[in-house]
Length: 475
Image (tube, rainbow, N blue to C red; front, side, top):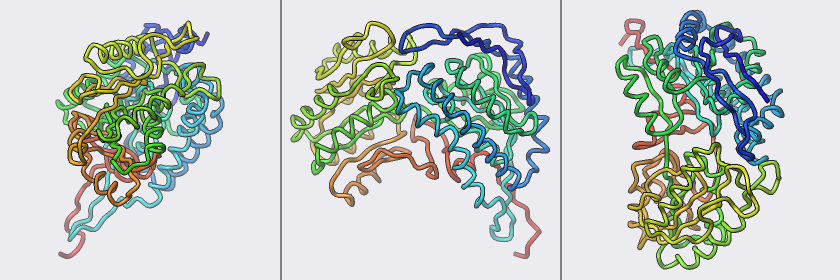
């Protein structure tokens, strides 16, 4: 049993004012493995005050100083990779192969941002003006449970590169990961108050950060519903807000695609991170003329997907993170049946051979209409929909007929055609015949998938305010 009794404010581990204890679980067993003492509004206010106090000096630091800190933070997180990997498996239930990538990612984001910072132009000549990119101020960073360590480190890396100080509210469900990350970052030796980490509930700590007048910017990753509440709270003080929210990503399989390659890749896109991914390709759009062939391949791929113990190297899908999340996915599977979709693989209940843990049967529906709730609402579990379309125009229309627009996928043997079609998909990122990540490219969504962008120069821009100085140059 792990009992986590401290938060991190002003460069020190302190006991929270908050007294609530929150149980931590191993989702593969459904068993309590620890408790975390949660911070409250008073703790959040103290963290904000520490960040505000540290900001003036930190905002004046040089590029070289920030690069040095990013390097030390990378080294510190990298040194805890094995421990972090273990926590991701134990606390989140990520399959071992995915967990290792997630643990490495938490360190690599500091190097990724270092590369951006090395060449970033903080001073730009625009006409007769000198435009200076100035740190925005204290930033509030709110992270989700499906990649807690990676989001803490990625958002903080950008804040450090910009010269901002930070107050971080990580998911209370990921407190073991947070403890490891906090201890590592403490070893990096940044000035006190530059970053503060307060684990607490969204309705207390998150709400305080979102409304506080001394917080200049919020970066939030999570659900669209919570993102809207943060936007409303931040409106009173006109905070700069970046939101990376939900998705219902289309995988548009064009009629010239090699289905033997495209369909298994589409299944992977839908089942990534055990289906608990905002970018998951959960709507697979297939030409009606090729649906029978696609369904047969998809059925075989889904039935071959291994769900179970995340510590087994052959496991593709681990458990849902919580009983609440398992219940949510079960409701949607039953809803799909009630709506008239045809169950091709999977279905409600625990997978065969698993009597404990929050595991979901990898599920595939066919005969899905795009107006069904299982096709429109984010399920956040391993549940996929096969949707037919008549021609290219119809496929693009169905792909874009969603309130979301985070990511899309296009599968085709004609790269020029795929590129043209991708250009018409309303999404912040579109993957063409691949499943990959580019840390230099902007990431964020259209429509209700969010506001603004993260990663690369676009992500760094969002933590800075342009200031125009006139009179320094002749017109």
